[in-house]
Image 1 (cartoon, rainbow, N blue to C red):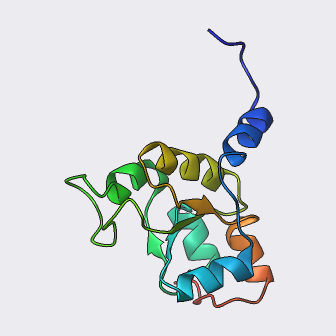
Image 2: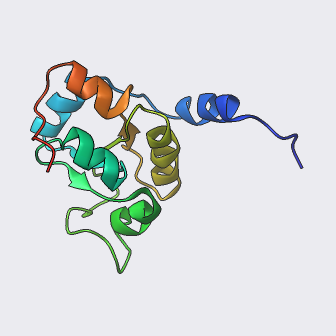
Image 3: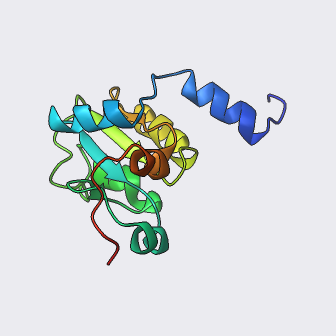
Length: 130
């Protein structure tokens, strides 16, 4: 058994397994067919708004909804080749989520550095909070 690690080291380890992208890159990827997946909890979505076209999936459902072989998959989860950009509020939980998607075989999964807040700060499209 290996020695316990802290969350910062865990984040560093999982992030070394793929290339993270910034807000403009995520926007361009979505325009080229990538699936943006918003895993923020409802209160944050209601407070800050949504990214138009993003699939909203609560974090605790993510693997079930994006597994192309799963019986509970979202219609968008068509292939293990699907380009997925996971978005949380500030870019921490999304890193762990992207690593989990890699473990499922979604080898093109990544996350948005800085999360939704970076997207919004970059002036990219956001629909008004409900």
